[in-house]
Amino acid sequence: MQLTSTNSSIGLIYALKKIFKLIVLINIIYIGNCFYWLLYDNQLNILMKKISKILVTGCAGFIGSEFSKKMLKKYRVIGLDNLDDYYSVKLKRKRLQILNKNRNFNFIKVDIRNYKKLNRIVKKHDFHYVYHFAAQAGVRYSKINPKKYTSTNITGTLNLLNCLKNKKIKKIFLASSSSVYGESNNFPLKEKEKLKPKNHYAYTKKINEITGRSFSKIYKLKIYMLRFFTVYGEWGRPDMFYFKLFKTMFSKKNFELNNNGNHDRDFTHIDDVCEILEKITKKRIKKDFDIFNICSNKPVNIKKILYFVDKEILKVKFKFISRNILDVKKTHGCNKKILKIVGKKKFKNCYNSTLKLFNWYKKNKIYQY
Ligand SMILES: NC(=O)c1ccc[n+]([C@@H]2O[C@H](COP(=O)([O-])OP(=O)(O)OC[C@H]3O[C@@H](n4cnc5c(N)ncnc54)[C@H](O)[C@@H]3O)[C@@H](O)[C@H]2O)c1
Image (tube, rainbow, N blue to C red; front, side):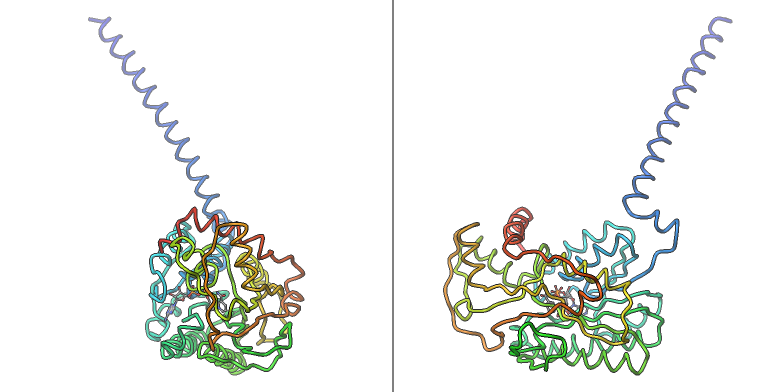
């Protein structure tokens, strides 16, 4: 009888020991996991100091999503987008899916043309910096649907600035475009060059610049216009040269080469763009309103890239077509002004980046979007 009770207490102690070991093990795994997530998600930054909050409009777009990804390493990002269907919404959702993995990212679906809703969102937050990328982009589509460019780019931008006008924001960056220069040919184009827009898209961007200048002066806001030159790279836009070319190569169709390929574009890699934008965020800029070219200052001939792809990557079937009157022949910007602020840097070489971009495109099956 005594032996059985001793046996059962030994059994009990043994079981308790096992349970205790299990609890210790679970705790070790749990604490380890916590540390992993803390480091992985940059939450340590939040615990140690309050991290700055930024607003990124057009966060599901090409530049907006890549820039948000970079800024999430240091900032909390509130991203706005209406997931417009100008090109694959599936591709925009895929970009968002990547951003949503980071706890410091918050996505809000909103149309910047809806002033009431936009204002409600903006009122709720204190943003340190604002980056406005949301727009109806693309030169050619502006001939088909000019009204959409007016409502999104002109009214939408005006709505945003109106929401921000009484807020204490350190800097506001607005996306402009190299297309505002039109057919100017004083290469490399400097920011003070006379603007000669030649399509509706470019006109809306020119009006954005005027609106930005006026808001900066009247409401004492620090507003900076960024004239992007043909941005390319991973997660790029399907309506732009590289992704259009790769898609026709995969579908074995003919690639139509405007103006027999006699166009030069100042291709600027997305990584270079994001690096410059991150740096300019904290740099002191003398004026309250200014305009900067964001370009590599290395124009490349479209036909030459096509021949390069055909020789080095995969056979390209193409046909020459006549010039589209909306396109400018050449873009080539001077980047001295922006580099004076962010410091000298080496820009990615377009030819070297082409093969990497093609492999990424193929691996991620981007042709399906
Ligand atoms: N990519 C380039 O080479 C280039 C060159 C010059 C200028 N830009 C400018 O840079 C900005 C970003 O360009 P991108 O290439 O990332 O374009 P994008 O089309 O990939 O991104 C724009 C985003 O804005 C969103 N959007 C459109 N209308 C909206 C609305 N009414 N409300 C809320 N969101 C809306 C779209 O859904 C999209 O996700 C744009 O302003 C564009 O005009 C780009």
